[in-house]
Amino acid sequence: MKEKEKIIGSICMVMMSIIFVLGGYFISKSNRLIECDEIFSEETTHNKDKTTEKDVFNEIENEDTTENATEKKYIVVDIKGPVKNPREYVLLEGSRIRDIINEAGGLTKEANENLIHFSKKLNDEDCIVIPKIGEELEENDEVKDLVETEKGVKNTGKENNKININKASIEQLKTLSGIGDSKAKAILDYRESNGGFKSIDELSNIDGIGGKTLEKLRDKVDIR
Image (cartoon, rainbow, N blue to C red):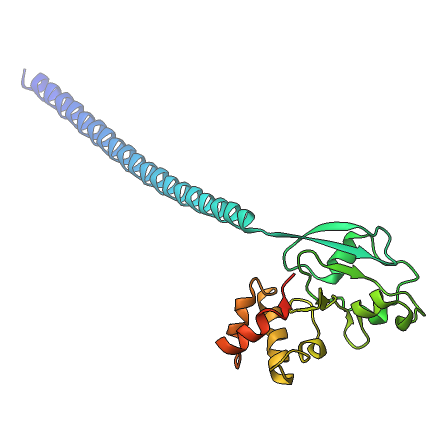
């Protein structure tokens, strides 16, 4: 009888040991699953945050692109002479003579490139005349007014007996009362830096040109 009780007791101990081992295994596995879920949840949240940041950045970038697109301004410029397609062209504000030449398909063999001021900025309503090789400027007043031997193509600076401050050369500006070398150069520098004069009143932004001088110049200058 005692021997039987020992056997039963041994079996019970073995069973309890198995139960404890299995219980520990399942508890450990459950904890690992919880940890994996937490890690996965953290990674998902992190990735979601990164996606949100990327979306916000893209949205801001798109807004900037749209804003820049709406700020673009255009000018209309006419080009004549030895270019492949002489006519009027719509260009972005700030474009230069090289840009309109490219739009016109480039120069022909007759063009005198040595007289072309390729980097000169264009203004709205400009008319650019490209000089021909061997052309006598004295015989063609239109080209003579539009060409500078040292600087290349330029715009006519005198219209309706008024000096166009957006197109005039230093020599033409110096014909105005009270405008010498330094002020004429300052006017050209201001014109180049600001894309031309939008108003005659902007002359007051030039050092040395006060209210009285401005009033004297008002009837003698133009901006178109």
